[in-house]
Length: 236
Image (tube, rainbow, N blue to C red; front, side):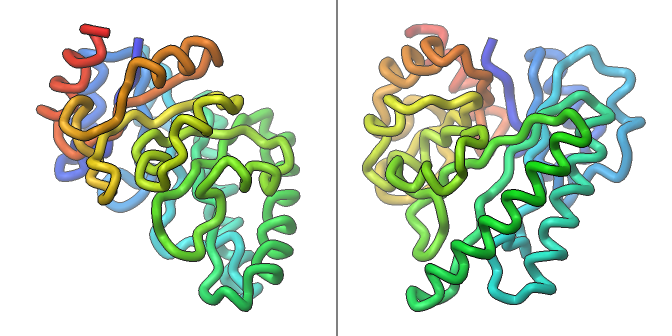
């Protein structure tokens, strides 16, 4: 069964979101920031669902040229790892960015440093994590399949909407991935629309999902959009 992200209920307290989502799915991805920031693992003990955490991303940059920012960002990621490990959850995270084209190579070195630190932390916690491909935003890492070698074999989470606005979803569907974010758009804006409201052909998406034996969550902006997406996917 396709899971659901708490992204659709960010305007509600996390316990309420978990109650509503656990009634209709066995897999919940928690957006671990803002109103759904997870302070400790105790909240999850009363639920039978499986969980994935989406690590904090606003203000974070594990590829920052400013070492203090890079180090702090890695610390936030590893703090998320620690709570997720208690819950038995995998973690999705963003791969960072560079501010200026002239900084691309230096930022790549900073990302590689963070990558090795995160891999060490994950091994110590026996935790799985995946890097997510980013949308059509200048200077973000991991926007196209050609960027996958930068994560050096770490887990990959395919975001369908992000791939679509970068015009490379068919190519990404030929790669190996372990987790997927499902949402739609018109190929121009990252709207996180319900499945069927945009221009993505989800038939090959679902075939690739099955072929990779990957987990997946619907990541749209509203609870009604989740229900609409479920109905659309059930027709495939």
